[in-house]
Image 1 (cartoon, rainbow over the protein chains, first blue to last red):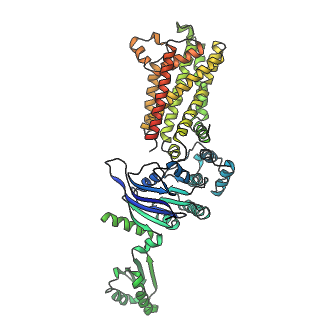
Image 2 (image 1 turned 90 degrees about the vertical axis):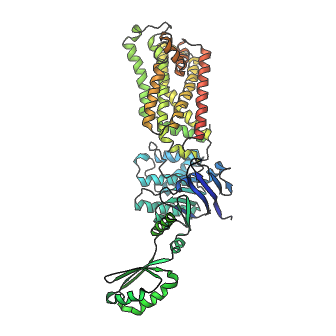
Image 3 (image 1 turned 45 degrees about the vertical axis):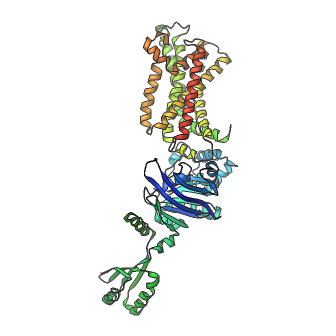
Length: 313
Length: 248
């Protein structure tokens, strides 16, 4: 498909010839202009996959095409298209923010160097501190400087390995907003790894859950959330608890029914089919129901469920 | 010279040679020579080479400065291989540009570091001709490539700066102690003389001594061959290791 900017086919990788496979037969396509998230626990193979995409490691087996070019045959050409952010900071604390950006501008032969540096510093909210040493920057400022370094060459693809790890929630949200603008306004395809499910949920158009070197689930956040096909229901019912419990008990789409005081909690299986009859029953009870709450799985719970399911297999 | 090479030279000078390092290398060794001269070391140690001991010492100290700077950058590279240099590897610039930028940055700083010693020797020994300066520059470049290549390669194998530091200080001690840096090799016992002749710094010190003072103890052509070979081999090893093992 023309719309796909990264195509990964049957990718396997191991660090040593006879070593354990870190990536196992991965098939993955990333569409042009999307924000794609790789979600997985520690040691799932996210960083290894990224290091292969960064052209630092060679795949053991399989094929990767980036912008219709083979990664194996055209690493230098591909490096011109991508911009990478490693998990750990690669900044020189001895340099100032300006010197850092100037270094990369010279390396990458960015035209109108000074103008571009000032523009990107302004865009990332770093203009005031630009001439201060990186050593004096906060964690969030360092990450924004790295993001500025990645972005000011206007790459086609940005590969970000855990871009918000170790940042506080406010700074994290700020970085997310920058990423959204970079993606929406400038059309940059962004692929990021994370173990923050809320980050993947907020930012990504699609998510792949990676565990033990395999992709165990792929889809949009809403697709993934509905894929388990269950809802959590909480009913607060005053004095009529027993009527509701005796109505729910025989239903085969009700699981883990718990009743504490006047509150009933259960898992609703196949909500698409059964939610209407539940709502009809609750409506009939009318004023006897104090509150009714029905929620789907959060991405966090979903992530844990998938990883646990994978382990059981 | 292209943009990336200049960028790497500038970055490395900023990162590896802060002002304190430059000042200490500019002040320390020339002061040592002056103090030794004032203390009358030339009367105490007599050489049969037609020069005083303090003048004889300066070329050795030039070599020692080169060794120190090379080892200093080697320690820096241990940290850098998982930092900026890992990033450099994924940028669209050639590996050769990275190596050239790194070596040239070190060579420039070696030259700046030894300028005070060269000024001192020209003041103490009388007027030096342009050819003397060019010759010494040539040998400084050769020695810088050789020693920096050696420490660069060492930094590829080691993971911790503290271990590198211990190993490099032992190597520097051995390199300088059993060599022609501090004393004439003709005065060494046969076994130590044999070991000194296996040491490239002996040839470097002798060649620089000839360039600046016109005295030498080893055949000059042989010294040149040894130094060219030493530099070429370490440069090739560095290139090979950088492409195969570095920054993984």
